[in-house]
Length: 228
Image 1 (tube, one colour):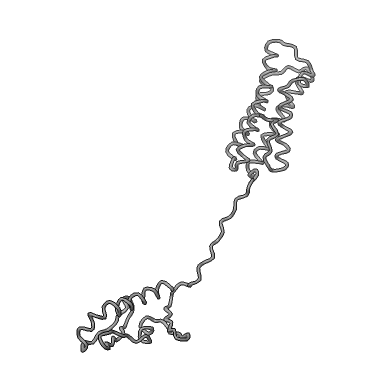
Image 2 (tube, helix red, strand yellow; image 1 turned 90 degrees about the vertical axis):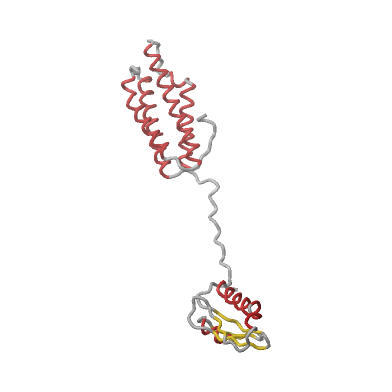
């Protein structure tokens, strides 16, 4: 039953069932039934010690309406809520693997490109016998550091967080590779033009770069162990 109807019927039951005894004390006394918050009143009739009210008058005072169904009389009040329960709205089911966020993917691709440029500059110097100097490679290191910081601020999904760790590992491998050959030159150690081909650290860097590229293409995180 609607909330407002329940209140009215409760008042009626309370008035007729409980207070009836009190009203019956004086059969000649005029009594009225009042709905709080509604204008007007309904006359109360006492018969054999019981109190009765006119349901049509009650409907009129409460701005309601009466309807009849078999042996039932239904009082409908305005502004009541529907008896039909609202259909619950199912909560959205989160995706099992949301993949990379757009901002992270864009920042990650930019960082990977900077690392490749840095690696190309180091490889070119070694293969062509040019001096490996800090001044020549410092701009690449600085840009890669800045880009990696931008990648970290773009992390928002679980895939982003996992891929960021691998990209950070790739950055650290490039730092180690660069420092290795800068140290060799500072110590006047001979650097063969094909030194990178047999360098395990360089091989890890290249393998990790391929793995990160594949992840960027698919948009999903897959750790094949290359960047660990």
